[in-house]
Length: 295
Image (cartoon, rainbow, N blue to C red):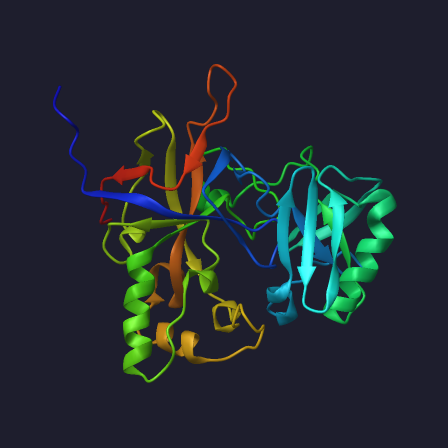
């Protein structure tokens, strides 16, 4: 049998989940893949007393909150504080939560709500609480970009996955070094999937990415990821800067997004409804392949 030739072929070099929206990520070797994205990704969110979501944009200290999935619990770590531990399924009543233009009903943490509120409020120095996504809520990616694909999302900004090539980060780092700035790593860009073995920004041009080890499972990059100030926040210190944004502004103004800076591609998930009911598992080392489109 003749093997199918693809324009682009690479390997999953890194997988990341971000259990609490805008807090630090967790590098994993494998993760269950659903139409919502990777399991536990953006499953929780920090909100103010009115239910509005908080992010590093206004609260850069969130970069220092390090989540951990430990057996049946979510643990949150922050410098100088004892870890917060809540059950993964903790839930009490439903409350209003807003993420960008979407208002949904989310679960509070029931008997763990007050402990979480006190812990987060101390860490972030503002009154805030933790909520968990209610799977019964119907929150969908923007149809303008997702098209007819069924693309539900939890508390992600708008799409199930963010895909980035490691060559794109290497290219940016070369520009940073030339400008006399320090290099950065992929944590600045909060991808779910980092691809090795492809050209810088091939993810911008590929039509679909087939997971070769998972027949039928495909990722469709559908919208360039516009960049806010978060890539300029040092994930080690939570201190904002300007070097990364300045470097990207010099070469990543994207006509597809009216000149906004883009880096990486938002993607939807196709072909994950297996007949036997088992969700596929993405893993580091798996092969992604696809053809380029230049429209």
